[in-house]
Image 1 (cartoon, rainbow, N blue to C red):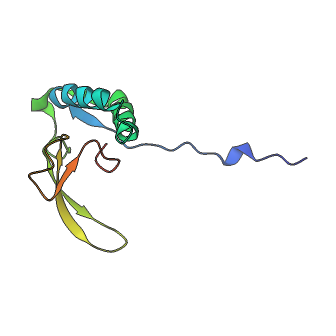
Image 2: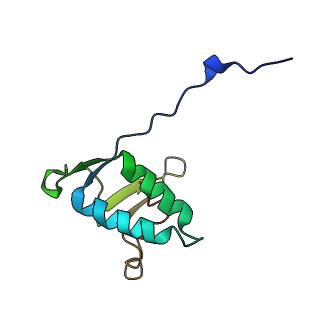
Length: 110
């Protein structure tokens, strides 16, 4: 009988998450409402999990280098070298901007 070596298992260390109180309230409401939508349930569940482990701070104390709802973010694909700018938005706000990324996509959730 062969057994797997358990000493090789290493838990994944996730990066810290910080969010403003205001964004937390909005995102909990959006994610909770989306849990019943089959197309968005996985992203909503992931978002709620990330919110659960986040450090919550008053909006005025959110550091400038933290991505928040409505932040404009520069992205670079490390494989292709392609660069782009996106704005992280709430569902329903993606219609107006071509580079808007909803928080209820698997890419947009923290």
